[in-house]
Structures are given as structure tokens and as C-alpha cells.
Length: 118
Length: 107
Image (cartoon, rainbow over the protein chains, first blue to last red):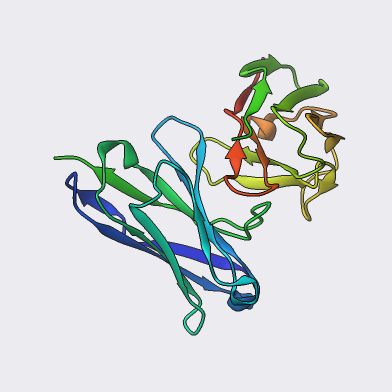
């Protein structure tokens, strides 16, 4: 059974950093790109970015709203994807979902809430 | 960036009705389109990919059609459990974009 479990969310002050983890199981992690999607309270879905798997260079792409502040990485030996969030803003407050693939998103984690507030 | 516009933003229909939600891309995206269902308080769930391919486990009353710039999600016989917000998503390259969502309610 494919499982994705996010962790690391919480309350953080503006300007600070936070790292989210997405621990996966049930599939060969190295065969897939991984994507982060967020959803602000009461709002729609927003793509944050994805990281390709190693055969495709292992590189990442980002939404304009987070580029230069957020970094996606992966540890294929542990089957974990990460989202490093720096210089957080109040508008980054959202539930952050880890998802599988970088095209259509076939499996989603339960999400982790990040609240940016002073 | 390519924009995705859904219509309507919300709709109310009766059990058993045929429901149609449309999604329009600002540029040709071929068939690189997916549809998701998000029930209240739940995680989004993939319904359709490649514009018309039904994801495994999704009821056959859901179907998708279209290519290029105009796409449709159809529910042939609305059920109470279909109350949700539906999103389209294009994936023909970064940045990936979602439609704004269509909220579906039961009359």
C-alpha cells in the first residue's frame, strides 16, 4: 500500500524557517518525482514545486511565489522528500501536501499545517 | 503562465442528475489535464488523468473529455457522496496550475 506521511508543520514566526518531511512507503521511491502542493485555509490548491527523480536529473522546479525561499530535496536511501522553507511569510500559512509524481498526482499525504504568525 | 478557468464556481444539483463541470486553459495543453475531488475536510483524490482516463478505483459515473483548451468533467448520476469541490489541473510542464475549484452541492 502506497503511503505518504508529512511531518514538521507547526507555528512559526514570519521570517523564520521550517523543514517539512514526507516519509513514503509502498513503492520504489527512486522511480518517482515528488511534488508539494499547499492549500491556504478555505482556499484552493496551489502547486509549490516538484523534484525529479535521479534518472531525470534530480532537479527541482518551483512556483514563482516560493522560488528563492523554498527548496525541495530528496533522500532516496530513506524514501523521504523534504521541503525546506526559509523567510516564511504570513501568506505561506497553509496545509502542505506531499504527492507522488510531477504530472497528475496519484497519491497524496494527509497534509501538515504550517501557520506563519507572530 | 497558462491559466486554468473552471465554471461554474459552484452548483447545486439533485441526486440522479447529470452534472457537468468545465475547465478552460488559456493555451493549448493537448490532453495534459487531470481532475481531482476534494470532499469537505479531506485530502484531494485523483479522478481523471490524461483528460479522459479514469483512475483506478474511481466510480464509472465519473468521466472526462476534451483536448486542447476545453475540458469537461461529467458525473452521469449524481450521488450524495459526490458532494465535494472539484479541481482541474494542467501538467504540461512547470509551473503546474490548478483551476480555482467548483463546489458541488446537493439540492
